[in-house]
Length: 72
Ligand SMILES: [Zn+2]
Image 1 (cartoon, rainbow, N blue to C red):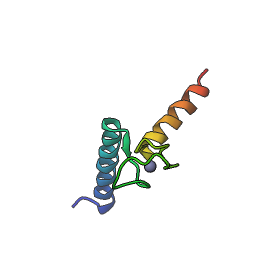
Image 2: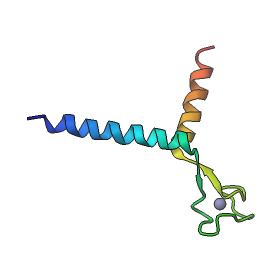
Image 3: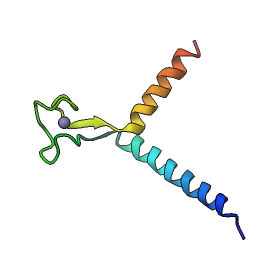
Image 4: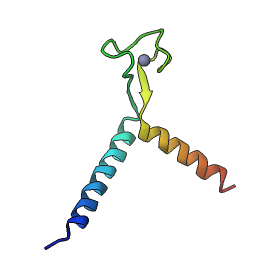
């Protein structure tokens, strides 16, 4: 019988990979502040664009910036 922790780890890995792929496919999500309209010129969260970068994408940008700064 497979240990439960291995199955759990595998599930987590699949979910993480799926999330990474999802972020890579569409790094921009809709703004949650000015939904359902989507666009609101006075919205501060998205500057009126109706689009916001996903958390995973922000993390990716941060990590690439960090990596670039420390490998020079
Ligand atoms: Zn907004």
